[in-house]
Length: 202
Length: 196
Image 1: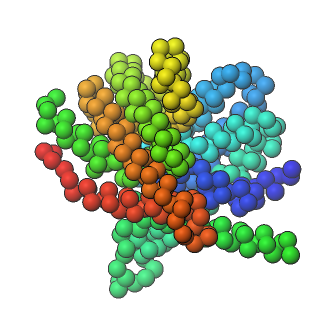
Image 2: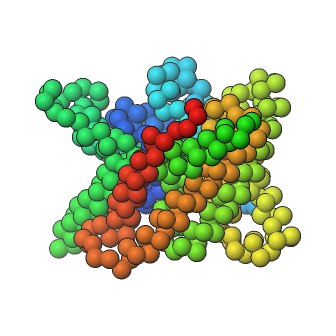
Image 3: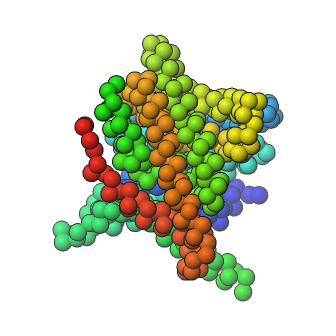
């Protein structure tokens, strides 16, 4: 499998959020604004790439029986690194993401890739798998956050776009809006990808 | 800790700050194992149990190891290790002494390690600066809140199977939209705060 295909696979065909439907907690919780979504997506992607590489290096040393615990320790180590770096260099983002940064440890995407890919494949393949899946996660988060921020606040990346006459639909940036938008987004993604598949076949 | 404070803490953990509908924690098992009510009940019971025990364990480690030795930055690693080993321990213990419960919980126990609600409640206890009793009560009641959300949602989902909805929304999307309506209902509790 070449590396480019791995990346597009993670971005579209096998998108962790929109197709595999994993990693829902951060997806719903941090997509209230584009800035938060980008921060969350990129930090999870960084952890994913690092943990994939390390796990694939150590895949022959880690005993099978305790592998999950080993994976979790490796992941937790990288999450702590990201957490501390963010507190030092991006304190604002660190405050607004709050406890969702330490919760990257239990993000199913990272553990799922460790178990399904990095523990069976070489270092380079695992690296690109991490990049693809990480970008796919970031892409899904940003897409969802773009719509939620646009409708719920009337802004894009903090910049007002609708003028002063627009009354923001605040419920969209609150909890119910998260579920609602994600449901619609997944349905739309399914329709579009089915159409593309149908066209390829015919 | 006074009785009034306990009631207020419980109420806020169950309804006002419901883990699933307000805090977005534990969504994976919430969506993953809520297709049938029996499995939802099994999962909820294991979550309540593990959350209560891990709240106690993480409080002790945080209070007597991490804080005195100034190891706050190791909190994430320490907590997840405690939870993972605790889940394993609980599994072994139940297998030996309460096999009936062990079989009822089945595969849900190991899955709990990666349930972000469990790590979430441990981190929240630290953030809220609760004492030992408070942490345990918060853990237990948050688990109860999780269970309530889970059981309500699973019974709705059983009905969804037979309902008529657009083809694109089949399965997961329609479940998310029902969850959205449910969380809209839970938003009504937000004004509810006593004796703060």
